[in-house]
Length: 413
Image 1 (cartoon, rainbow, N blue to C red):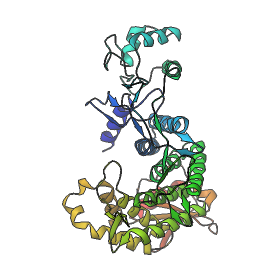
Image 2 (cartoon, one colour):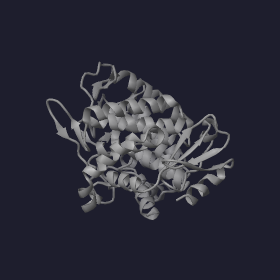
Image 3 (spheres, helix red, strand yellow):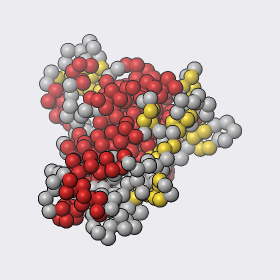
Image 4 (tube, rainbow, N blue to C red):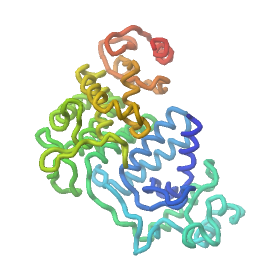
């Protein structure tokens, strides 16, 4: 499985669908090589892929994945953020041409290489996918031939950025969507485990989002930047915000995030839950929540994941809501689990024993290595002197040695 994941991540990050110059992923590729994208960039794509590359970098100990995650986050912070909130999308075309901002002529590339002193410019051009005839309508999309970037690539990239600054940037949709911002917040906290500046940005954006998109305990769905939000939230807004708040708690162990996650989960249950069935919206336009992963993971699945986490961290009653949700759609899950990957993952999580590692915040925040068992959460307890390893209903092991936690977790399964 690791080889499949690594191959996919490597090929996507070579360039084309991934923008090697400004960072960030385009919406999709139009060819089998992932070279020619539809140049539109969406916040949800970049949030989910940033999180994925960050997790892969941490779990596999691969710096190249962390670099892609950082570049992705930096793109969002540099181009798609205002007052700590993230816009929703940027267009594919500018000046009436798709990709005009993103592509280069062969002469431009050779000129830049000569300017920064790259040896054998013709061979170097091949390394970045450039040729006189081009690879996209006579122009060149930058795509590396291997994951190992040439030593001259960073100054080369800076010069290509400078050329872009002279061009008209594609139109940006300055809509603020709660769910999509929450996805990006979660990605920042995941990436923050390897670089603290992203944790701080996650905290800043989370504070701004909850302040501007909720009032009197009711969440809002979207608004234009600097405008009052008036559209009530849908299930996906509650689900992804809960998920972001739980990730914020895991990253910082600040209790306020856990309390907020519980508050929004309670509201989601009140508004959208009915004996195992979830609604995406209620009221004038009542729609049932989808269980399959479409453009991004099912809101119901993300909500179930948050309820399982809250059940372990706060109160077992949330696990019962999660179980009823899984039970409600269990027949479909059993027949075609591949259609519902996020919900299937939560069903597997339910069927396996979860683990909780307790200690003081200071000690838990010093844990850097990922656990080999996937269903583990952290919970701060300032009364403890050592690490305490617990299951769903009881605690059964303690250690003063952080390096032994993973071994103890495996021994309890």
